[in-house]
Length: 193
Image (cartoon, rainbow, N blue to C red; front, side, top):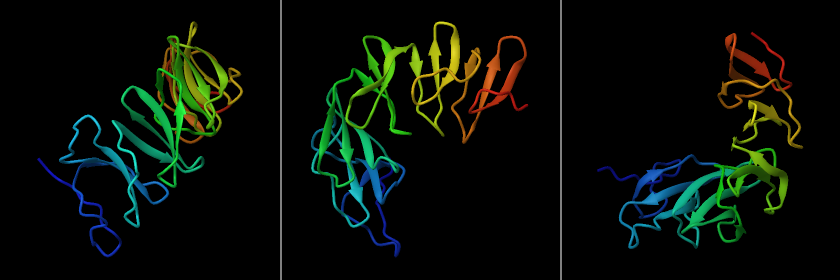
């Protein structure tokens, strides 16, 4: 078993806490899971580069979204958005949510269908998808009745339907077409390969 510490630029510990796992630092804030918490179910927290700790402890800590300055987190069965001051939690009323907010939208599960909400928790793209991934450069891959496709931030379909997909990397995405195999599409749904 390994324990980790968070170090500053001079390699001095930021706090005396030890972590079993540390996440990706965004906006100078790192999600982490305590090595020896009092309550094993609630062992996640966030720590800033100056050593400030989130006042709440979480079951799940995900990375901050640099553009929204919010992190998706979970306490028990409830999801929240944590602001970058590490103090204010915004409750989300969804059964399940995605990993992070991107392009102002977060995938959310409502009655077994995925849609997207904004940073206030308002549904912006109604639940209608079997699966939904995070947005990248204004596009997200979703699985609908006819297969996978990409949508824009208004929910409009922007590509042909395909059999399977990876996430967008930049403005491109690798997709598997039923007849031709693997192809690369751009964010407008045009084939580039």
